[in-house]
Amino acid sequence: MKREITLRINDRDETLVVEDADTLLEVLRDRLKLWSVRESCGVGACGSCTVLLDGRPVSACLLLAVRSTGREITTLEGLSDGQALHPIQEAFVSERALQCAYCTPGFVLTVKALLDKNPNPSDDEIREYLSGNLCRCAGYADILRAVHLAREKQSRAPVQRK
Ligand code: FES
Ligand code: FES
Image 1 (cartoon, rainbow, N blue to C red):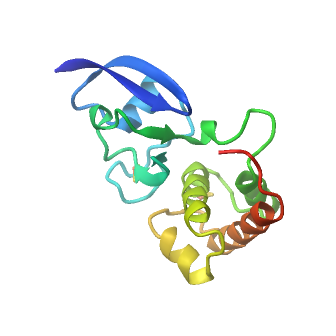
Image 2: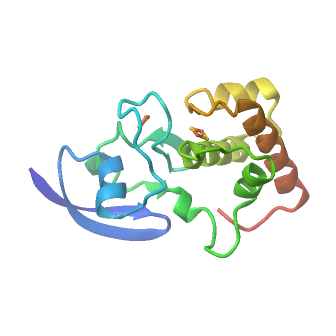
């Protein structure tokens, strides 16, 4: 069945007609052209499609769009102001924590949720929080360093960004 819904995405309301079975991933990519939200496994096992729902990381491939109304959805496109990178993105670049970068949007958003919740995580806490995000290029040591650099950047200069 089709229905009209309004989604709150990156601080904007988007009203569109969707099928009941459309996933949030399909709507974000195919309808709204938010290309940072990437499909890989399609079954909630890899984290490539991670978005923030009310600040918490979720797999958009597992969530129906009709169940996402009334929530704050953040994709990577909503993280920076379009001019400068977010400190977490800067840290990933500085630490070369990406190779093909397919997994990177999901990692960056998950790191954001982690640091919002726990500004000074240990290595074990970082590994545990990021355990749902897979990197096929296996850059986990670089990603760990990037999280620590992002933590330092954010503690040195709290920025009024999302
Ligand atoms: S594509 Fe959604 S978790 Fe892998
Ligand atoms: S950088 Fe290639 S999958 Fe992670």
